[in-house]
Length: 565
Image (cartoon, rainbow, N blue to C red; front, side):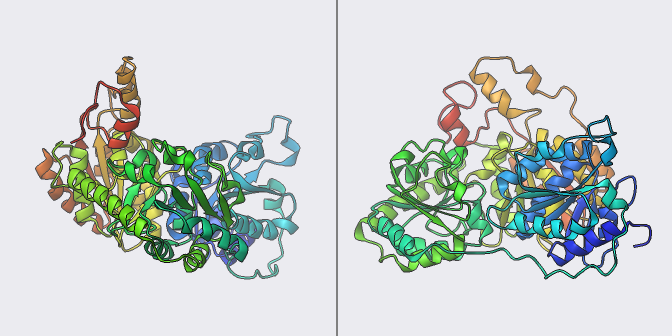
């Protein structure tokens, strides 16, 4: 590591020992952590073009692997540029360890170059913020940050390394670490489990709700076993998708904004809900008018999650999602006759949704739906990275897009940062080697994620970008239609040449003419991506191609109103 300060060499050793494998960041003026990671045999350094994009890549990588990922930043503007994405990381509980620098102490509060109170900026989204003022605490702080990023409520931890530390000589024989930091798992007391089981046992219309915490805990097999014994349909939040295969007969799609008619009747018909790893955030509660009257049993590894979503739980179980669900299932009696009828009701709603929203039942002629049906067939093994504009909300609706047993999804969190999909995709692709990575986004999201594509091209990551193009920002345009307000600013008078950028990076671009041409274009995109190229498929969508959750909850008339089928 010639030319790299010994502090950064020690930092790379400590992070590798703690179980980190990948460091994202921009090169700094002088060799720093990214350079030390690049020279380290157990670390992979990924140079990015923008700090915000690098933070999104770190999020995508962390969500897929479940392991801590490092983001190397510099003081001042680099840290500020990453804040938007780090707020999203916090909402997703993504274990991201930020290592940043601090200007020389003599310049603090005295007009020092790029002096910013980074701790104040980070206060809203960090699990812990550690300042390293001397070389003796660097190794401790880094390992502590990794521990805090993965344990309790996983999230963002920050280590701020003072300028003086980076210039200090640190002995090469620093004490070794203790190996990879482990995620600590616990289960509730037996008395609490039995009390919760008693509540679940008397339910007549139960519902099992799986959130992002259930997915992070790999609670899928235990959850399905409990659902089958309890006699409960299974629904997920957006972040909870991939926890269980969506072709399972008990799975009824997602809740709230993403509930596909008539499956909102399943969430609204439940009298008892077991929520695993979900805070019942606002999008999960949308259109769920009966939620405040249900009996709620909540499982989470974070005590702050209980009651955060308006409804106070009748039983709060603090513990690991998978282990707690497995113990709870063992305390439940077999499902009752009343629940058999409830399951038949849910099954009827599921069949109706399949008939209404499947490819065969698509009478609306929606280009977005056509593309998503084809994606599920052509990419059954993909990791799909979602954005959150307007038309791409179609991708959150089962069975318009189905997450099968070999598929995975990565979504933005409650902040729903536009541009997340394309920005996070290189990090996802690095973590999901051997399977395709597909981005579903709007044209606005594609433009916002443009600075991530060079990194993908340099690394030979074969991304597929499915761009649902409504020539601007569809969500504000839709709401302005409802208000009879001007929409001119929501349309792109001069779009960025995203297609030219993709071609310039050695990729391919297609704009299929008509619905019948979409599947063939997606197959060619898969072939191109398998050789390491970026493949963009641009699909024109009209303003009235409105996802059902948006239609049901936000529209009273005008554009997109009416019967979805």
